[in-house]
Every structure is written in C-alpha cells, then in structure tokens.
Image 1 (spheres, helix red, strand yellow):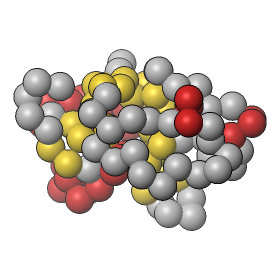
Image 2 (cartoon, rainbow, N blue to C red):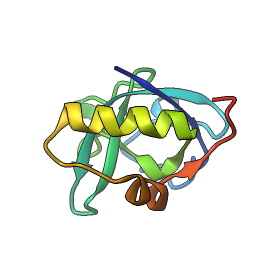
Image 3 (tube, rainbow, N blue to C red):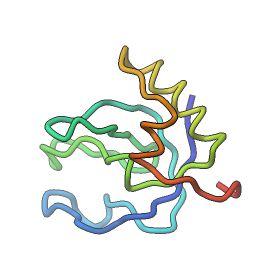
Image 4 (cartoon, helix red, strand yellow):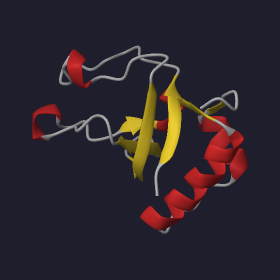
Amino acid sequence: MSVECVCINDGGRPKEIPSNKWVKKGNTYTVIFTVTVLPQKELGVQLAEIELTDGELPYEYFLANRFAFTEEALKKLIELIKDCSDITFSMDELLKQTELAEDSV
C-alpha cells in the first residue's frame, strides 16, 4: 500500500541531508512506510522517491507534518500506519499533524 501526498514545508533541511535528497514544496511524493519518530513522538514517513541512507543518519524519515493529504489519502494513511505498526492514529490526531489538500493529490 502507498499513499500520495504533497510537500507543503521544505524548510529547515538538516545539513546531514543533501539538497538532492530533500523534499521540495509543491512536489508530489508517495508514502510507503510509517513510523513514530523519537524524540518528537510524531509520525514519520518513508518516501518512495527519496532513499535516506546511512549517510543521512540520524535522519531516516520525514515528518508527516511536511506534507498535505487529501481526506481519501488520510484514510489510506491510517491503514498504512496499522500495517506498519501496532500504534494507531485517529483521524483527529492526523489532522493535527498534517494538513488537508485539495482532492487533486
């Protein structure tokens, strides 16, 4: 399962991640894996389009709040989260950490 999203925040790139492996505002990406990242205790996502490797450690995932999802994509994201872990997020929790996009995503 995968979920499409649009980057809405490409600011604050860590120096450990080169610009060619950083998200770009307005670009569409595909979430293929989710995890709760520490110490933030927020939803982190792995993207099909960008592979973060050992060279970018300690960064392994992008925070979900960098992306906007359609309502339909959020429903798919909840299923993906369930598939990836035992941790569940409600729609309300996801809306606090992300933004809704237009249905064109």
